[in-house]
Length: 388
Image (cartoon, rainbow, N blue to C red; front, side):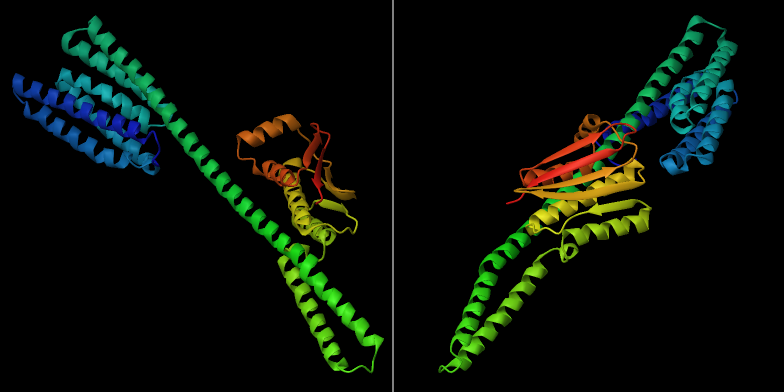
C-alpha cells in the first residue's frame, strides 16, 4: 500500500497480528513440552511447519498483486496444518483468532467471512471432542469470531478511506498545479499584451508621426538643401516603424495573430474535425485590447471543452457583442443541460477546474459570468468583460 497518513495504523495492525501469532504458537509449544505425552514430537513438528508456512506466506501476502491464487493456497495450507495440530493439541484452538484476520485480509470479500464461520465451527467441535462441550468452549470462539469480523470491517473501512484520501490529495495537488500554470500563463499574456499596447501607443505612434512629418517636409520643398538627409530620415523612421509593428505582432499570442474572430473560427473547425461538434461563430471584426481578446479566447475554449465533455450537444453557437466599454461573449449549446447552482457548488468543492478558471478570468476584468441552464434544456454561458 502506498504511504499515507494511515500507513502507521496498518503497520501497527500487521505487527500486532504477527506478535499475536507468535505468542499463541509459543503457548502451544510450551503446552506440548510441559505435558510431555508420548509422541509429542509430532505436534512439535507440526508447530514448526505451521510457523514456516506462516512466515513463507506472509511474504506473499505483503504484495496486494499476489493475493489471488497464491494467497488462497497459503491460507489453505495454513488451515490444514492448524487442523492437524488441533487434533493433537486442544490449545491450538487459540490460533484460530489470528487466522480470522488472515481470512478477512487475504481472501476475497465474501469468502473471508465464510472462512471465519467455518473455522469457528471447527474450533468449537475440536474443543468439544477434547474436553467436552462447555459454555466457554462454545462462546469463546464465537466471541473471537465476532470481534475479528468487527475489526476486519474497520480495517477495510480504513483502507478505503486511505485510498479516497490519497485520491483527493492527488486531485488537489493536480488542481493546484493547473491553477498555478494558468495564473502564470495569464500573467505572461497580460504582460505581453501590456508591452504590445505600450509600444503601439508610444514608439509606434511616435515613429509614424515622425515619418509623416518628414514626408510632408520632403514634399514642401523638393529643392531645399539637405533633402537627401530628410529622405534618409524618413526611410529610417519607416524601417523602425516596420520593426516596431513586427515586435507588436510577436508579442501577441500566435492564435490571435489574425484577430479574435479568426481564432474562434479555427476553434470551431478543430472541434468539428476532432469531436463532430458543430460550432457556429458569429463574431464581428472589432478592435479590442490584446489581453481582452486573450481572455475571451480562453473562456471560449474552456466553454467549448465543457460542452464536449459534459453536454452531449450537437451544436454550440459562439457570438460576441461589444457595447461601449463591455465585451459580451455568449456560448449556447443544445445539450442535456444541468442545474447551475449545483454545478457551481460542485465546481468549488471538487476539481472541476474549467468553470473556476472562466470565473477567474472574468473577474480579472471586473466582469461577470452568467449561466442559464436547466436539465434537458441546453446551456447558455455569457461572459461580460469590461474593456479598458
